[in-house]
Image 1 (cartoon, rainbow, N blue to C red):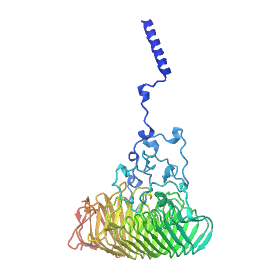
Image 2: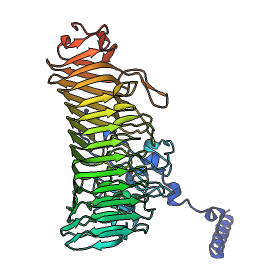
Image 3: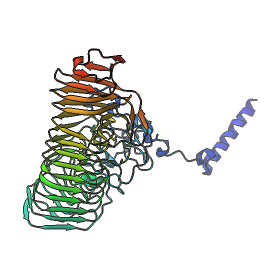
Length: 560
């Protein structure tokens, strides 16, 4: 038996050595191992909820943006630092490879999903939270990217060209600047020195296919100012007849990192007429932490995603005094803010879109302005029509947090839809002494509810001082509102949660969490039964007018 076993073992060894030396693969070896892309979880499975959804934040409280993607060490992938591979160097400004910029420097984004999705973002065709959003109409997100363009990389990847290029301190007057070439500016100012341009005649044609490079970094703009200097433009005209061709573009050089400081690039412009006609072609454009100050401009835009006062990724500071700003395009509010925008004494008109749109942790302040909006057509994911919209798209174009709309004096005329609409973010609306005219038959003052975006809360604070308010206030079952009336303010209207969007779809039937605060000088006149969860103030300040105010389901006693 021992000899037999010895013989069998020797035979097995001979056969094994023969197989190893033959060069032939076994069936298991002939089956290729899955590639990394095939084994990596889709981006929607690795996506985490933004900061707002991860915390029980109080309305009005600021939340820091959290990257949408999950780091490789939590997704099951092998991080580059553990695989022996050297990751590519990040672009200028600390941005992550591939043109995705993390708000937490040094954090490693997940590998892009197969098909070219950006790190930390959604796969092609995918939406936040793994949902597949409705296909956006031509032009993309409100105030967002022009059609035909793909995601932008870094500004360092761009070969900037200009028909006229100024690279040092200079003064020019009465000059003509013309470009008919795609992705070329008519006037490119790239210097840390001071530049003065007086009475220019700028004409730009030649469409761009640069996508985000046009919106984020100024590619193809009629006038592009960058690299840290202060440029002063007085008088003259700027005309753009091309897609992705913003009028006057101030790029502050922060690489599109929301909340990061810019390099000091400043544009001061006064008494200039700006006209743009193409899609993705704002009038006065600020990104990357740039600083723009405008006086008495006449700005008209006609294209899609072409706000007269427009901002995009990386934000900045925009101050406008006087002037007229008019938009005629879809997804083109008079102001689209991913920055801090202050406008005083100006006329702001949108004939098709919202009057003001604020995305994420940004603000718009209006002082003694006349704002008129006639939002008659929905854009992108929107299922409501409105005049002032505060939301978060989760596209990465703005940090998550509280959006703020403040208006003092002036007139707000809403010709179609709700006057104010808050969705997928927290918002604070502050009004004082504003004349509000609601021409929409539904007479809805404010809606706080779910719309076409997801991933965050719907939470609003409406503060009114010396202010007259009227109309319905709609708060969805998954939403919250704090209404505060002070300094002789009055509200004539009702609060409930019965909401139908512009598509005719029922969004909510029950009222969410509502807190109403009235000081001794304020009044609320009911026009229908109303439902709140908390009431602070003297019940005698509520004029029932034959209706009932329910507080947590109990009729409030002591009303007039």
